[in-house]
Structures are given as structure tokens and as C-alpha cells.
Picture (spheres, rainbow, N blue to C red):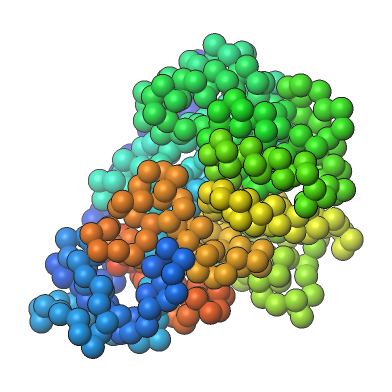
Length: 484
């Protein structure tokens, strides 16, 4: 009892310290804030998949996009705060659809802890203006951080909170509650929906009865269920009514020979995928089922790349396992020493002949075939795995890897922006650059429509018409990832 009281007191103190951050703290990170702002001579990549529009002027007023017009004919209020952005591109803010607030802390069994200070700043700093947490290990903290951000008392993206994991017997980490059956699943969904969760995530050992119960309860309340599954195959989950499946192809256990119902076959999943014919009838039937049942698929390529062997430097900067990505010095600098050492040690143990890159490539091919068949592909980073994926940095890397998968740069940007907004039911407000939408925008130097690597050159991020200084936010969390 005393331990529980102490933990509750610690939780209350951490929330209080976050809530007491002065307004001046937020102000120092704001680069542009005015009643009317004009972004002039800028390249517009609007998030719809359309070609970039050159030399445009975007006018922002009251937190929304008021007008978009060629700079030669644009009507701009002479009192507007104008930014000459020749040589820059403006994109919609990214909509991160697998963007946890927690990070791996190592240990056996593995532990995870929320990065409630560093992650919100990093997401926003690197252009992610909206996230879905897609599984929580500290749901009360996530909900309270959302409130603080919404009230302007913390810096961070707009947040859609996913409840605690819906996990069955056999969890690999003690940070998850173990369901005791279908009734328990129903209770969890209703309890956390009452607290403010807007979605739920089924996990690797959930049974079909538990998943069915969770889906039914969530759907009664107009909420959605996604899943990182193993005990249940993709087609089974689609028939049950799941709304979304995480991590592309890689968790799908349905291709394991003699798979037992409600049992995760473990390493046999990867073994089955190594020999799987991506162009075969079985895969085509899975894709057909997902599309027919309107099940979205979330691409999270960075978390798998972090566990892949280094690619040849001649393979290009967006190749799977590119040193510039998995050993990105800017990303490593925001980690504390312990987190950095854990990750680099884990990387040193990856065998040069590991088949992980082959599996990632198969998942890429699956995602491309899914989109070609009419499926809704959304994107996130998943800051878990071996600790080499960090908020914001991984979201940008995901877009680059979508291009490596075969999508054009503007298609990849659409997947990471408008598609996520559509899944959330927010596409009338965010996800693309259009008159009347919220001014959630990222300003990058260069032209990601032709060179996707330029997407990393983020300098200003607008959320609801307020422009934040990307580099200042990154500098404010140096050495903190892995601590808070």
C-alpha cells in the first residue's frame, strides 16, 4: 500500500512540474507568431499526392490557411508578417500513426518508460503536428500531457490517445495488463474510453474472443481498434472487424504451417515470411480481404531498419540500414549516455548476414501492393525495438523509407499526412494544405518532391498558425531521451 501511495505521489509531482512550466518557456521556442502571416515564394507540396506548386504565397490568419496563390498575383495584407521562403518547401504537418510516448529502457524482461518531456518537443520540432499514441504503458500520463498541450501549458503535437495494450497470456514485458477473458477486454475498453482514450491496440497474445469483444465495445462507442498481432492472422482479424493492422506484413502469422488458434507461433512467423511468395495467391487473398473489409495498414519501417545490418554506402542515403539513418548523429545526441550505449551495443551484435533487411524489403513490397489494390496505408515510426528510433527523427525516416519502397516522394508524403488524417476522421481540418484547414505546416529547406532526403531540413513547424523553431526545440532536449 505504501509503495502504491508513493508511486501516485511521484506521478502527481511529475504532472505538477510539467503543468507549472511558465509561458515564457514556450515563448522562447516560437519563431513566428502574428495575426496574419504570409509565406512568400515558397514551394507547396500539399499532401494530396499532386505535383509541387512553385513560387506560391500562403496567407495564415486565425490559425488557419486563408489563401494560397501564385506569388506574382497573391493579395497580401501589408501589415502581415512576411517570410521570404525562396528555396524552401512547405508541407502539411506529419500525422504520426504509431507514435508512442515511451521508449525502451533495457533489462530482462524489457522495461519501458514515458518520455513525457522530450518526445512531445521532438515530435513537433521535426514536423509531426498530430500523433496517435498507438499503445500506452502510462495512459494517465499520456492523457494528462494531452490536456497540458491542448491548454498551451506544454509544447507538443495534437494527440490522439490509445488506451493500454489489450494483451493476452504470454506478454514479454510486465508493463502490460494480461486480459483474463472477453469480459475483461470489454471492461478495459469501456473504462479507458470513459477516461478519454480514442482508440485501442490489441497485442500479440490476445485471443479471438478477446479481440472480438474489444472490437464490439469500441465500435459501439464510435472508436477504433488496431493491432500488432501474432496469435491471430490478418485475415482472421479482418473478419472479426479490426480497423487497422500495425507494422506492415511482418507480424502476420497466418502463413505459418499448422498454426494453432489463439497461439503466437513466435520465431516461426519470420521463418514463414522468408519463404513467402509476395506475388502468390495467398498474399493476394490477404490483401483482397483487408481492402474489402476497409482495414488500414500502418507502415513502421524505421523500427525494423534499426535492427538491420548496415547497407553499403553506395546504396544511397535512403537504403535500408543506411548509416546516415541508423547512426544519425543528431538523433544520437538527444539520447542520454545509457540509451545511446544500449542502442550502439545492440547494433554491434547484428550479424552482417542477418535476413532482417530481406524481411523489411518484403514488407515494403506488401505495402506497395496493398496500396495498388486500393488499401489505406498510414505511417508511423514506433520508437521501441532496439532503441534506435527516436520521436520525430524516425517519422522523417519513415517517409524516406516509403520512397525506398517504391512510392514517389509526393505519394510518400501523402501517406504520412493526409492518409493518417483520413483514418482519424480529421481530414477536413488537417493532413493537407488547403484553404480553411488548420495551419499545421512544416517548412523545409530544399525540395523533398524531387529529393526526399531534403525532408530532414526542417526549420520551422507551424501548429495552428504558430511557428516553432525546430532547432531550438531539439537543443532543449539534448541528452534527455532515455531519462524523461
